[in-house]
Structures are given as structure tokens and as C-alpha cells.
Amino acid sequence: MTVYADSSFFVSTYIKDAHSNSAAASVSSGEPVWFTPLHLAEWTHAVAQHVFFEKMSDAEAEKVYSQMEQDRSSGMWAETPIPERAFELCADLARRHGPGIGVSTLDSLHVACALELKADRFWTFDERQAKLAKAAGLKIS
Image 1 (tube, helix red, strand yellow):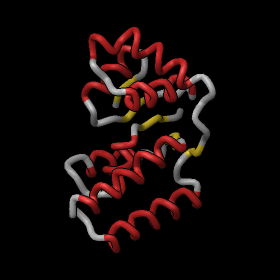
Image 2 (spheres, rainbow, N blue to C red):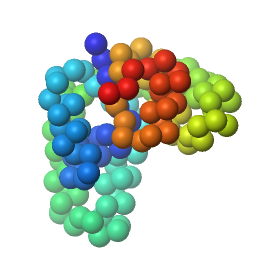
Image 3 (cartoon, rainbow, N blue to C red):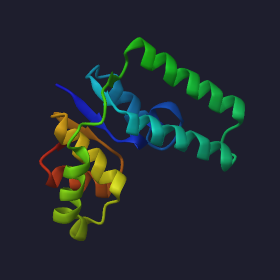
């Protein structure tokens, strides 16, 4: 079994917020969780935003970056490239479900990646993204 989580899930894993306890409990299940360059890009921007909005210091951010690198090096996340057809499927999801759900490009790109990687489950704290993932046939947890 594999899991695809959106980037906000990874943010909650490394930065304490309202969803951190749920993220930690999910990660403790030991199920493999996909991690793509999209995750890294979004996650890094989210950490930088925390510094910009003075929710954390530069030193705290460096600790978070280091922890992510250690976890990646240890194989904690199932690293993979963005699937070749993900952008095409992202556009299809937008056409089919965007008008009714109102998801962003990045939200539908995550769902497309999950589908292309044949993830068994999808982890997100975003209500619209969860609706899209469910509409696309993914199990939400």
C-alpha cells in the first residue's frame, strides 16, 4: 500500500500547526508516502513563508530544512519524479471537476500525481482537494 499526501500534510509534519498531531499519527502508521519534486518546492516555499510572516526565525527554518533533508536521506519518504502524464491528467481533472469543486492547479496536480502513482490513499487537510480526490476515486484518510 502507498499513500500520496499533499504538500500541506508535509508542512504539518515538520511545523507545528492545528493538523500536526493528525499528520504525526498518519506517518506513524509506517505506510510508504510518495514525495515528488512538487512536494519539495511547495514545502520549501511554505517554510519560507513562515519566516516571511515572522512565524519562525531563520534559525528555526534551517532546523526544519535540515530535518527534511535527514528524513529524505534516510528514505523516510518514497521519492519519485512527477509522473509523465500528471499535467495532462491535471488539466482533465480541472475540466471535469473544477467548475463544481473550485480546486487550484496545484491541488489538481497533486491528485493527478496520486492517480498516476496508483496511490492507495490520499492524505490532505484541504476540504476541496479531498472532494476532488474522492471524486477521482481515491480513498481519503
